[in-house]
Image (cartoon, rainbow, N blue to C red):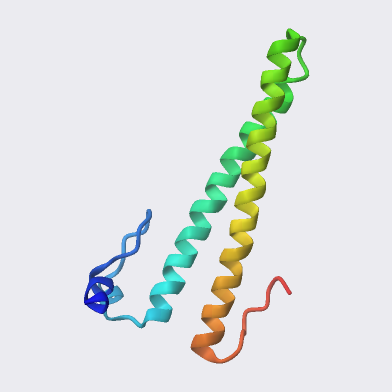
Amino acid sequence: MIKKINKERGAVGWMLMPDWYKTASDYIKISIQVNNIRVMLEDLKSRLSLSSLRLRHALLYKHSKQRKAELKLQKRIVDEHINQIEKLLEENENLRRENFTKEYGEDYCKFNS
């Protein structure tokens, strides 16, 4: 039953899956989904980085103490989210490497090592 459910499940995200996706191996499906997740995380990280930069710029202006405290709190929260996204990107990269190693026996794409 689980195999039947997983067979019909498609990738979630912005990518449209090609026709051959249904007949592809599990490793290729995982690889496609991992790359899709990486793209979404990098997009989110870039948006949050811009928000962090805006908050840092807003802190330079003279505001009341309460307003500055609110801005600092917002910046701290955004920076923590950026750190969490960086950890998720690292885990995503490890998953990509493990998947590639399981499929081909060794990692041919050692770009970041």
